[in-house]
Image 1: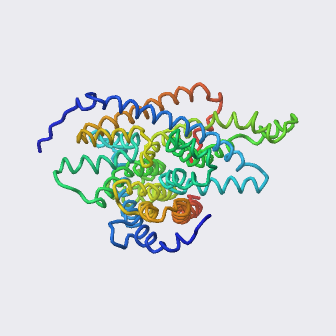
Image 2 (image 1 turned 135 degrees about the vertical axis):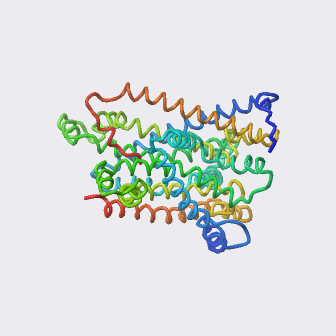
Image 3 (image 1 turned 90 degrees about the horizontal axis):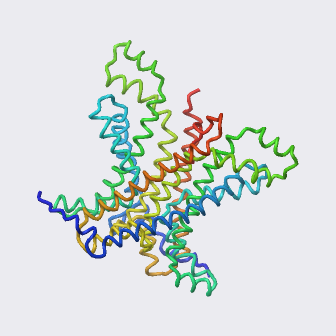
Length: 241
Length: 225
């Protein structure tokens, strides 16, 4: 088996630029998807801990439906299925401004939002009942109790499982290649197509993902130390959704 | 505007060809998911036990294996098997084999971590007691540790099986005609993406949700008193 490797394909010509662009798109897509996932997850996770049954049911339906269907199906759904139902002007704007990128961000955000909701719900459950009672005794409304007391504490508790979910999102952003978003895996594949150098191209893509994951987990470990609530070990008992 | 008729007209193709795998194309979500879950778990047991081994030549590679595959997207792993492996072996490989191999190797890293955690949850005294009864290492594992560990692991294993089941949709990227690819094929002809993708979402949901209920039942039935 003689396989001659030529690593120079990774920087000769345009390929280096493609990898860099792919990396940037992956980061943008993941950041946008993560912001959406965190917002939806916090909202749905908080709603699921409320006393009021209808709100709980809506949040539960969202969580159970969206996280139990493959992300790839959601990509196709948001990219191909939804735009025909949008108003003409919105649709035209979208297709002039990279509709596939926005569809992918929505797919990632809505899918991982459902998964994050479970993480945040378990975080809220780990908060002692007395915190709710103390906040209510101060005269705060339910919305204020959550906004000012419960959610800020819960977000500090869920940093470790939240980090692994963020990493899942980062890795899952690669599924966006199926709707032609030019992210890292897409560009890796493009280099392979143009140079017929599969091993070199995939090695580069793989190493970048490994580096990204390592970087994010390092960063979040530092964040975890900074935001840890003194005197609590509760976070060890939290389970990821 | 919505036309459920498009689903009804293509129901046989979507379910028989896409979900089950009976038809003109190589495909079937279940035909891929079921063996992938079984083999992925078996390889995962080996990986998990190797992670727990004291011998560095077992422990080291197993740790590297787990850390590597958990840091890389599945799509990338599928491309490794699809694009690089045929070059190395110097012959074309069938989509089914490529997809199955990629899923087994990738998911074994995740199954391995579940097995490791399950084994670690077995009290030390159990191993000591087994040893005191004169059981060897293999017999201790087989008759004492693994049966108890399996109880701890059962809910997480089903959860991971659900993840794998959803992940098999990615086999459509290399042309394997699973449920997702079947919907794509029908959509090319019918141009009814909303109805078709929503329908397969419901099919996937029915499969995964019933598995999830099974996981919850296992959790209450098997939880050590």
